[in-house]
Amino acid sequence: MTTDFIPNELEKMRQEGLYRRLRRVEGEQGPTLILDGKEVLNFSSNNYLGLANHPALREAAKEAIDRYGCGSGASRLISGNMTLHEELEEKIAELKGTQAALVFNSGFQANIGILSTLVGEGDVIFSDALNHASIIDGCRLSRAKIIVYPHCDLERLEEELKKASGKGRRLVVTETLFSMDGDEAPLADLVDLAERYGTMLMVDEAHATGVFGPNGAGVVAKLGLGKRVPVQMGTLGKALGGFGAYVAGSQALRDLLINRSRSFIFTTSLPPAVLAMAIAAINLLNKEPQRRLALWHNCRTLREGLKRLGFSLGQSQSQILPLIIGDAQKCMAFSERLLQQGVFAQGIRPPTVPPGSSRLRITLMATHTHEHLHRALSAFEKAKNEL
Ligand SMILES: Cc1ncc(COP(=O)(O)O)c(C=O)c1O
Image (cartoon, rainbow, N blue to C red):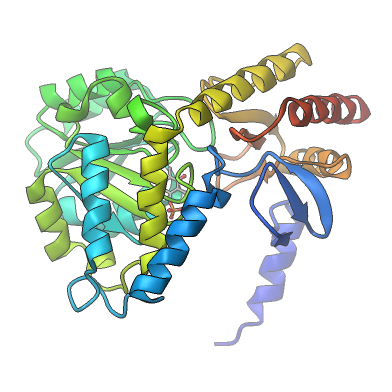
């Protein structure tokens, strides 16, 4: 077997407008970026609160390195369970109002590890059609039967739940704030359905953690549903500005995952600096609520400005604004045109989003200034007129 097929694969992707390349960022992840050597306004980052370069996180990381060194040396179950892991987990459980929490090395690893632990062959998973790739892969890895229900369509979900009653364990999985569309799942109704049909409910709060709810605890907390959502996953690398992920829930859930979740067991644990940054970030959620207010203010300004220019932004109610273009090549041409005017809004194509729904995924930060938003709106207007 040779690798001769690779150039053909790449050429095919180029022809379909689906070829991806890495862009190079110099310096910090801020509201402005040096991208491929040019300074641009950054509307493509999940650093929603601007914590990725906050002095408190930098200091916490430096102190942790001085005190604990650089690496954790092993997986948690060998010799890599440091005091900072447990301190962070207590902080997360407190923020989420749950009995316990467990840290994973990334959101991707959390989703594949949780799903493949909670369900297996003979069980059924009900997954929203727009769930993230890590949820999709977790479902596949579990070997449970996967039923994909249309995005947020609870009537269809209920039909499927009825049909699958009595078949092993059942689990409904959804993002609370959808990563590519910025809309919220109808969580209160989902909780009712899951309870009525005796089904587990797992939520992914990757993009809601730090942003929604009291102290940024997420959508579940915003709706006061904490006690009724048994599996709450979220990430530490987006609004919290660092890296890593968590699951919050019961002590029994934590214990089961420690014993069974392969992406938790068979990997070197997060290093001290990363843990200390996450602890500092959670402390800031409480201490600096003005960041969330600034983010909401910026969301309103940009959303209203784009709507005035005639752009349609789907059902977004959040810091993620999807500007749907449809065709992948047109979408990338729009993104390039904006970039020429100093605005970076990444084009998102299949397979990240369904075919025919390529879009610019515009994301806001608390640290964008009024002038940044104004400049971005002028660039959008110009790009629209030119294309
Ligand atoms: C909804 C969702 N879940 C999980 C992940 C994975 O998280 P991480 O980047 O920490 O691996 C992402 C990240 O892109 C995401 O958008």
